Length: 124
Image 1 (cartoon, rainbow, N blue to C red):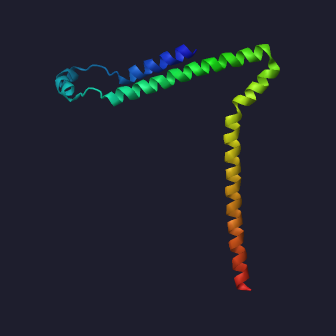
Image 2 (cartoon, helix red, strand yellow):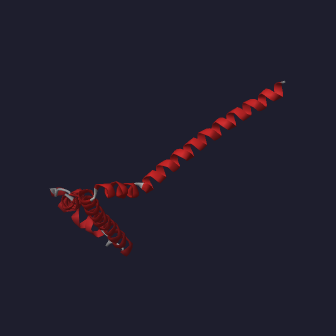
Image 3 (tube, rainbow, N blue to C red):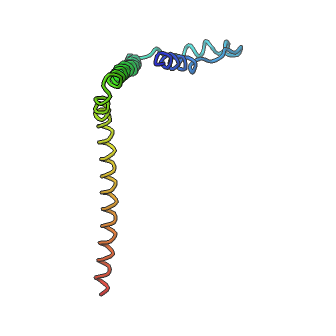
């Protein structure tokens, strides 16, 4: 499945760059070739880094998938402990966002009611 996905992504990349040849294009071709500049080393390096990132993520995901499958088949109790360890960063981020959101709402409410109380004291 992953090989198919990678091949599809590469094929889509090539298809997006392809354009059908038209007769008038042959007349414009010499002018277009003159405007084409060779890629700089920065563009080549960026392409290599992007490809390396995709391949690295593919390899890591494959290893994690095999490890989780093995743990689920051989030792189901250990599998749940493994899942809690894998989801810990996500849970940390979600709980942090929840606490920050609640803190922001509490601050807004406190600010609103403290202003209302100050206005009430000034009118007395």
